[in-house]
Each structure stands twice: as structure tokens, then as C-alpha cells.
Image (tube, rainbow, N blue to C red):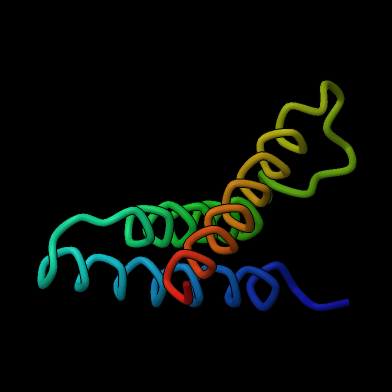
Length: 91
């Protein structure tokens, strides 16, 4: 099983790239719906990666399930923002 550092690297790297690209587009062309969604998606991916890295996400030993719900919400936000943003950009 991979370590938490290896598992957290993918969403952190992807989130930084996506958020950086969205930020650059906002600076060059102004705020648009797809750039806002891309920025939200990138920041959510970074948050999920940091949660995995610190051990606060995907924790099956969590008694009240708070961290699991937060992680699921952030993953859902990231995926929804990415899908809608991609759909708007490609339309």
C-alpha cells in the first residue's frame, strides 16, 4: 500500500496546476464562470491532498465521521466544478 505522501502528491500537484492555470486566465481575461469553477476545483483538490498528507482525510477510525464527510464534500466539489468548467470551456 502506498504511503500517505505518495497518495497525497497527485491531488496536490493537479490542484496546484489547475488553480494556477485558472488564476493566470483570470489575470489575463478577467473572471469567467469556467475559471471560477476551475479555481474552486483546484483548491478543493489541494485541500483533499493536504488532508490525506496530514492524516485528516480518509480516516476509517474517525468516530463521528466528520473528516470523512468533509473529504467526500471536497472531492464532490472538485469533481463537479471540474466537469461543469470543462463543459463550459468546450461548449
